[in-house]
Length: 122
View 1 (cartoon, rainbow, N blue to C red):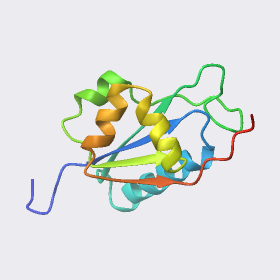
View 2: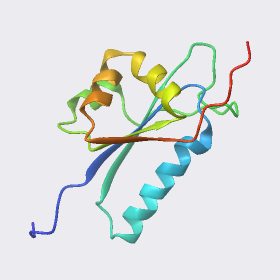
View 3: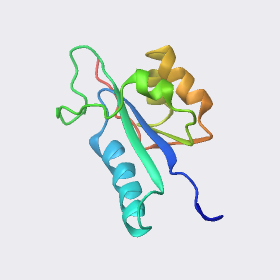
View 4: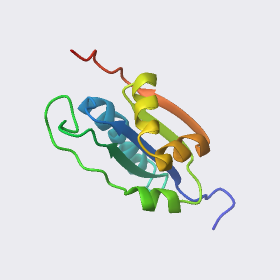
């Protein structure tokens, strides 16, 4: 490995259902294109959807599955970046759904959110 080479940065997109599709797809597409333009290997991207019983994964009603299971996420030695779909309120909801997602949130080297969650009707 050359001095400039480094292992891919591990990036997790965490979304609590129902999430806006663009809040998940937007960051995923940006990182995918960065990998393509950078010759590959810059980012290892995964997405975990925290389900809500009786609710689709997205506000558009589309089913969307996780690309990583909680057990696999816990096995990652590091988490470089955490992106939470839907803003801070959704981050709290997603992280509180399980101790594994909460631990992932706390061990991330850096984090951010994409978009904002729509107001829920009661």
